Image 1 (tube, rainbow, N blue to C red):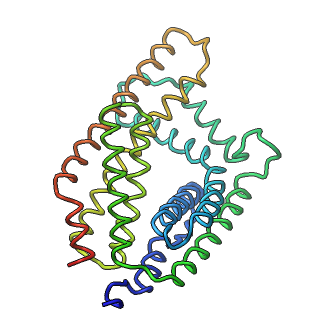
Image 2: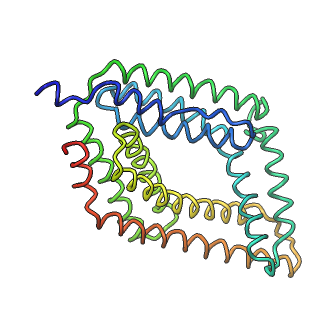
Image 3: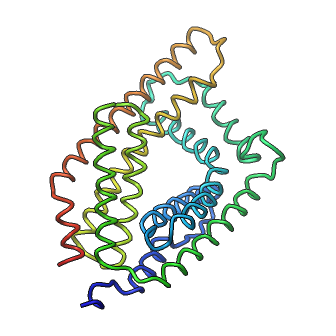
Length: 294
């Protein structure tokens, strides 16, 4: 009974290794994006395995990974902002867009690619920051996998962690629905993304078709919340960065663009709430229980 109560070490070790697989992309933008994703997955696994790893270990490792990711956060955002602008340019050909904004976004992206800290301290250049961040995150990955492989992990503990993660998602979802603020939706997104990685970890370990469907739905949910947050960040950047001495035509263009960004943000948030309701109505807690205790 004791043996049956414990999931084999290889379950978590191999599942974690698959979840944390490094793709080693060639494209510069993809490198930054994928490196940050890898860091987020690591932080999610630190939370999941915290009862075995210990709070001190988790706190120290999470800070290292967070620092490695944050150095490149502004570069990633500048790429996303440009991508949003270009997509709107294609999808709304009749909309008069603020051309000076495109120039501003392009210049910002180019500057950050040369110096991700943009005037804070001595510049190393993004490629060097990227190399340093990659070394730190890959080292943290190997350290985590070794720690996991050396510890037994019970089914009940796994189930408890999943339930706690789902509770956090549900709580922040209700707060976002009640408050309606960008910050509340971002908090919900953070918990949702973490839980999505936990679901993925379990799915990589047991290959359940039912769990695969849930994982895909949570991925969609996280993407809606992520896009809403990107629209919010772009609007904040525009409000704090565009020049005040604009001609009337440009003022109107900025105003229209901001209104559109706000509308797109609201649409993504509504889609997220709608999808989340469908997911929660499916009895997720009971489904998760069945996965660990079939």
